Image 1 (cartoon, helix red, strand yellow):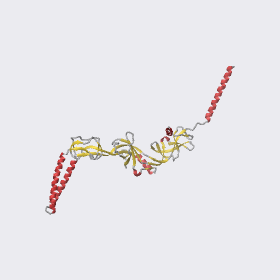
Image 2 (cartoon, one colour):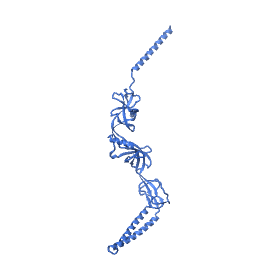
Image 3 (spheres, one colour):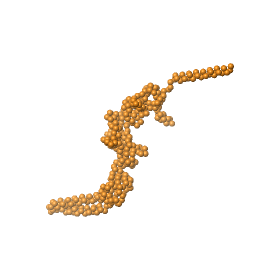
Image 4 (cartoon, helix red, strand yellow):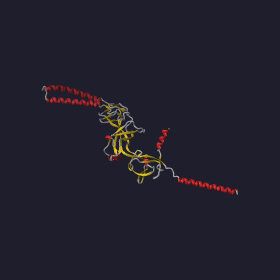
Length: 372
């Protein structure tokens, strides 16, 4: 009898437990899940700077060949290879003996012709000598004077000086070698100012010109672009530069447009021949709509974004994008400004579903940092 009573009680407990679970399941099914949290960004139409970035190489503003102007033996090199040399500094001393002798001979001929000219000139004025004698004396005097000047120039050329200030290169001839007129002795690179050579892809340049023609882009005043460079160590160079040359033709073999920027290098921080990253600034997009790239989903039908209306309901909007600018896309059509696009939580959001707007991860981290 006791066993039957216990079984009945157990059966009642199980029944009540099943009934309770069923009631909880009904309540859970009746209660909809909370709206998923998403972060949004508001679309704004405004002016945006559109910089350009290029791989570039530095070069001296003047790479000058230092050549011998007379034939002579190199007597001594007067500089250390690779040193910074100043304009007019002596680089090579050539033997002077034969040119000193030529100078003395030219001086003697000049003084002799000068004396003869001074003797004949007053006599001609008194009609004591003929016109021919007077002309011969003057011609001899002028020839001797020119010969003296030529001899003096050749003697000066025995001292080979730097034509510009800059960094010297290695010597091409050592001491004791005979060099002739026009022999290349070394190079001097003028590094202040410094030239930065780079190339612009022709399609990119044409795209900017097209946007300018449509009134969607403004070029800088007088076409003068500002420039910045990042050096090999990853640091930005602290002096601003200027783009001074953009070619008017496309290179047929490479399809690029050559360009050059100029930077002050008075401290010698930039060496010629090194590679740098150049940033050209000056183009402004007028009332452009730029959206973060993470908002955009690329499908077979084109680019799509998920927007949130005033009631926080998700909807899909097709957009047409053209350029990638930094971490953003330039929108050509599909958005007018004022829309709210989902940037975080895209996986949870569904069209027609209501969502909860939350701060972005960056905003949350900024709030935590401010609280600390």
